[in-house]
Length: 254
Image 1 (cartoon, rainbow, N blue to C red):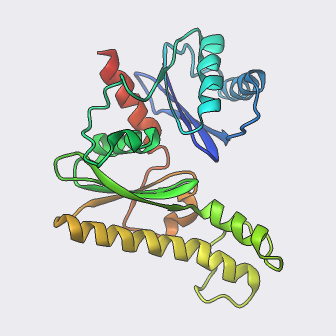
Image 2: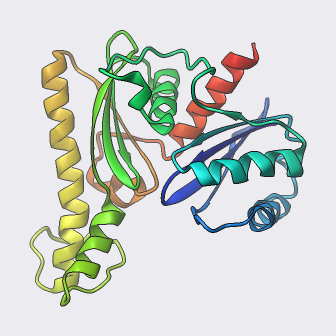
């Protein structure tokens, strides 16, 4: 069994990939103050809840945008499963070209998402990743990471509205029945759901026009389920990064 871990600013995802059957996924919040013992306890509870179908773990790979948590999960893999986790970064071959001004600036999560998209959907693909940040990524017709846009994510926008505007409440993210809201809750949710979905779709349209060829479209990330009903033409693949990580691990194991 292979364990892939995607450590994001808001959520941490775990994927267990075996030689048979579908992968098993687990998602928890990313706590900057989590201890190794707490992380071990949380993952152990999940493993026991599914009857230990994830065991034995014989390899692990991590993509992380939170350096302090990288250390926690590397230690977790060692103590809980006895494996040395590979960390996506220099020294690991992703199998994908990065055609940007400074390839070292590209986050591990975006590289893994691109690899996952290439493997699952082929070249010429636009990935809309709704995470802590919303990223719209182009995997070009040669299969290269050709650039992206990065903006504040759905959760950050919701948090900023309620914390910065005294009269605006916290909202639970839901798609209102209509775009035009008639109360504060619906008005905020409309901008957060319809607004973000439409913005990402417009960016994808613009990227496709710049590229000059049609692209498949994929929706992923922790907040992707919130906007998925508004983007029916997109393949919804919430654990695309984990699939990419599994592919990268296998490439480097060979």
